Image 1 (cartoon, one colour):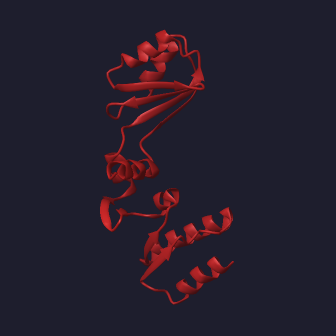
Image 2 (tube, rainbow, N blue to C red):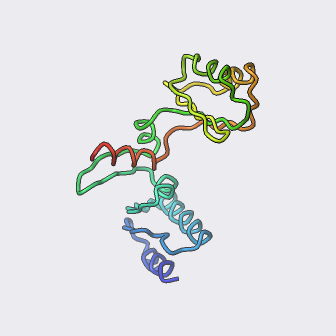
Image 3 (cartoon, rainbow, N blue to C red):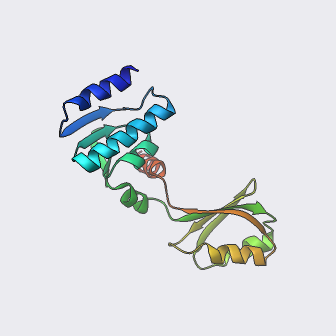
Length: 170
């Protein structure tokens, strides 16, 4: 409740810019989602600039137009969440299913867009060399006898980007 009151008190004077340090820390999920929505509305409709410091990278990805990753006072990266995700890691496809036989995996590895394939507990992770459609990959698997139940295509998350940057700075 103290966190809600502190943020509300800050917004009462309708400032042009606010600095928030972990604004949803200690809030229940409903209150945190409401606060995120309110901040986004204020930023978009009223031009409020919000500086957010957070370790909650999912929250930063949802709220921020521009993200800076700072370590020990050094700026490691700056850009939109989409730009940062594009610079870290490669596109990938996750396929859940069964019957990922050696023949099915070989057919998948032979695809020109595929950089790597890993299978663990019915989840097939396919790292791509470049942005490619998932349908030909699924077709190759099915043709080789695999049973595909679910397909998810994506890029690195903001958390993946952060972890990569921290590893590079060691």
